[in-house]
Amino acid sequence: MHVPTWVERGGLTAAMSLPLSAQRVLAGRPVRIDGLTLATDVQLMLRMQRLVGLRGAEDLPLEDGRAVLRRTTRLTGGDQPVGAVRALQAAGLPARLYVPSGASGPGPLVVFFHGGGFWCGDLDTHDPGCRFLAERAGVRVLSVAYRLAPEHPFPAAHDDAVAAYEWTLEHAAEVGADPDRLAVGGDSAGGNLATVVAIEAARRGWPCAVQLLVYPATQSRRETRSLELFGQGFYLTRAFMDRADRFYSPEVPADEPRLSPMHADLPAGLAPALVYTAGFDPLRDEGEAYAERLRIAGVDVALTRFDDQIHGFANILAGRSSRAANARVASDLAAAMS
Picture 1 (spheres, helix red, strand yellow):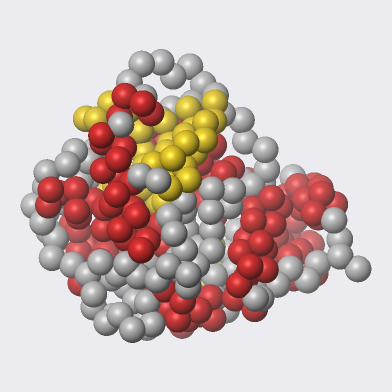
Picture 2 (cartoon, rainbow, N blue to C red):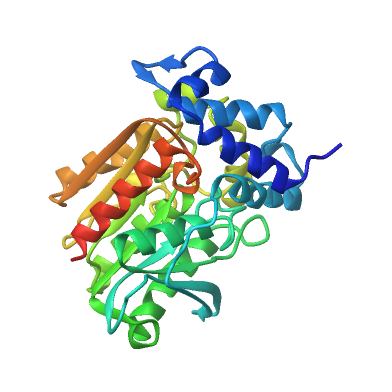
């Protein structure tokens, strides 16, 4: 019998609020891999998801997989206050504008692209995280829902992301943005899109103050140590990424720069980068490798690894450790865009 989401959410919230000592008893023995220790509350959350039989999106039919990602967010994201939220269209794409409390006049804005392997994820899956980021950082966040594969394979997401950023520049007054304090950001597949938008902005001479890259996917068909270590059991799986490749870019060369920014020619004038990785994430190594590539190219880079976190921590606001990581991201963004 299926357990109602509100029951699951209440149980998860209660468990994530327990004292650390109680969480450790419930979570089991500490998970230590590659010299890192998984956060106790994250370990407990993963265990609870297994106990209630929450299947991964990669194991389900397409629409069911998309639905389970929304369900996961409802469980882990919580209710996050923000000054105001407005629905709109950006370059013909569904978008949602988050305005922090007290915002007035033109101010900093981040054009944000959600993760989900290019085949799932939407405005709702990343709603709590965008609310939290906007309110904590004190910046407007414009979340844009690009077209998804397999209905719209490569380069649809890439083209949508570039078009959405260009639209924001042209409609800065409409969304309350100061064009000189416009940034691009995203997580996972959305982090991939943020990298290519930043590259395109530099090539076209568009203003871009910051690129916010949260565990970005930076290469296709990867074989890295972090994938080998964490490709099963830590939320994001190898099977999910394989499905993403099949859906989004089955016939695209792995070194196509619009798909794999690790292979892109980096232009002069790239925006400073805030790059965040998670210790227990299959994408950890490629995110850090891209940060190093940016640094070698002369880009101002701040790389932060949250050693005890998993892929998806940006959508986990119910637990203390992931919430603290998100608070750090917001604080860094606020400082970078002040």
